Length: 354
Image (cartoon, rainbow, N blue to C red):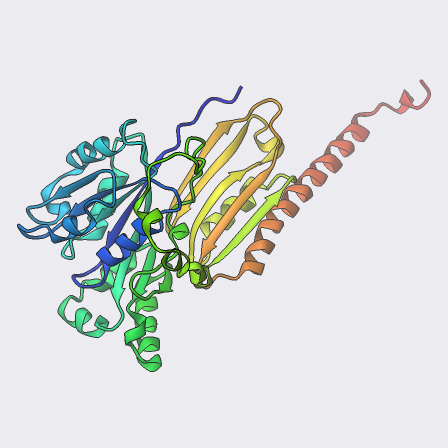
């Protein structure tokens, strides 16, 4: 029997300079949570925690960290204390979002998460929110924004409705140049598709007949469906194969994954390369987690992957994954030819007369 693997809770860091629209984006996620229970750590700068009050009542657990930015106020072990509160069984959370102070250093937040000893969490990505209308002025006041963009996994270019086409192109070029391989999506009022950050959840104990109303349920129907077009901001590629993948070729693909490819999730099968395990794959931005999981005796040997990004070439990705199949088949055929050659070579001359 396959051992039970407790799902780890993704922890998403939401960063950006003051006024970029982080809280607006967070509230949008809370209103369109796709069945997820979201825990929020609000990191305010200043004595009056306005952001915490803004999101209060919309989540089950809110931990507000005052006295300056999170990366200066606590170290990794202290952050674990807050995360332990939100990952306890009683909270039953699916996602945790850290809304960083506008003056925080996002790379330090990421470092703390990756150094965390909490076995119940996994890094869910650094989302950097950029005010497109104020980007030139913000960059002049805070040149370190280029460093923030360089470590981001996903860049949300917010308030794009306030910028003319020519100006938006210039901002996008500057963000692309600073952001390196990060996926970049445009947004208005922080409206991004939540499925970029977390998957929809369907609970067996919430079949719709008897359950507590959520903030999402109380929205008018037109508000809940208003953002249904948001999937157009990114592409999603699904790949399923009953043919194993070449481990060498697949790792080469992962090492060279293209800019704009934000998330990869699913399972990979390497056939005779590892007949005992399947490999659970979770990639967000530059971060890659690849874990062997012992398969059940009757479990089908299948590769199932979903790749999500912005500006990606879906056809090229499909071809690269198909090449991983072909490389495995070619290696298998070459091995069979080699084995047959060895058998013929060691055959005795009188074997045909026997």
